Amino acid sequence: MSEEFWRWGAADIAEAIRDKRTSSVDVLESCLARIASVNPSVNAIVDLMEEEARAAARAADAAVARGEALGPLHGVPVTIKVNIDVANRSTTNGVPAFAGRIAEQDSPLVRKWREAGAIVLGRTNTPALSFGLFTNNRLYGRTLNPWASEVTPGGSSGGAAVSVATGMVPLAHGNDSGGSIRYPAYCCGLFGMRPTFGRVPHYSGTSAVDLPIMSQLAVVNGPFARSIDDLRIALWAMSGHDPLDPWSVHAPVPGPRGSGPCKVAVLADLPGVERDEETVEAVRQTAQWLAEAGYTVEYVMPPRYVEASALRDRLLIHEIRAGMLEMIEAHAPPEEINEAHALLDATPRMNFDEFREGLARRTSIIREWLLFMRDYPLVLTPTAWRKPQPADFYEKPVALTEEMVLELSPLHVPPLLGLPSMAVPTGLVNGVPMGVQLMASQFEEEQLLAAGKVIEAKVAGLTPIDPAFGSHPRSD
Image (cartoon, rainbow, N blue to C red; front, side):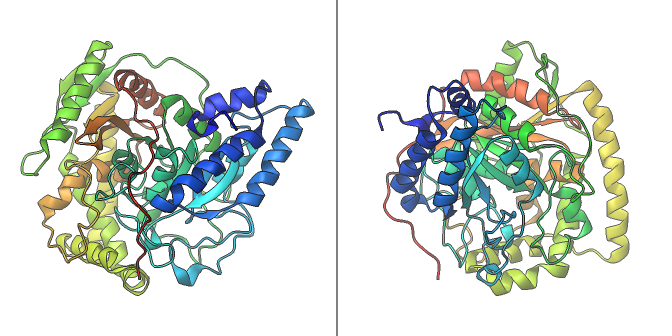
């Protein structure tokens, strides 16, 4: 096959298939060849659905031949994280004991992507129980960052990010309750969208019970892509209400519309928190790019920023301490257990009254942010105050302080507020991706995408690469 379709974006693939300039089968075979070439080195796709995908590609081409109406992702190969149901596959969540959890039906977002024409090509790796900023587990082993194997690919959607960064697929699904889309996108040089809470339905029937309340209010599903145009198509294709998720909203999917320049609140410093200068420089450079495009840029602290980050940590860590730690200790590799204990040790305990009061305080903070964002529709921050962490950061026990946890505050504020946020790549620093985060008000994802388009035009482009290292290690 002369054409390397794996290099193409989702929008270009769908258009070429629609115009009969190529076929779904040819695109799929190109992606399968790419997977065979690079996946053994990065271990991102851990459940390859080769035959099912080939059958879906043939059916997609038959639909084109019959002149049927085609969805916006028709014939586009995608991956789904192993913590979300795909019909007739195991929803393992990176845990060997969950291998028997076979899904009877697709989760709503998978069904929506299929209805839009996407072809599910495989499932991607996650840390055990999808906990943490690294991607390793006892079932599948470790996922490596294709830019630099000594740096984490991020977590928990590390496999999803790597599957897109290396060109194995143009789009991937991830989910995020504390950075699990945005941090892997940051580490791998991608665009990653955390939508407004409720925008994309969240449900997996293989889960034994529903999540605890704060986890329900924090978790969202969203896409990874190598371009803003692809991210937009992927997001709206998975959005919409589904009765399986009572929190999902009936908010209409926006049509194409212009989101012009607006005021941007820029956070480039957080007193008392250590930072890498590269992360701050990325924010300042991005602010300059936005100003050049007509945005009004002001360096200002959003309301109760530190309090919001700390409250998110206390509420979610309380739930982990109460119900998840025992499972992590039973099923996760040693470094994930170290990470869990480090975060728990650095986070003050809560009693029931404090938890109840914290949930009430959350509403007050959201209200202040929504009022603030009437004046500043966008907030620009680092994705994290530190560069992507070394892959071996938690191989030995680490003693974290509350200030060190606040280094992740850009990742932790949006889940408390339920506001949309997006990781945006800004280039490479010493061969490792660097980027920033944009936040918008409720259901204003188009504001993020418009600003992201400005930044994208300024960056040379982080294209898929051939990993320069050998076969991946596996955990015991």
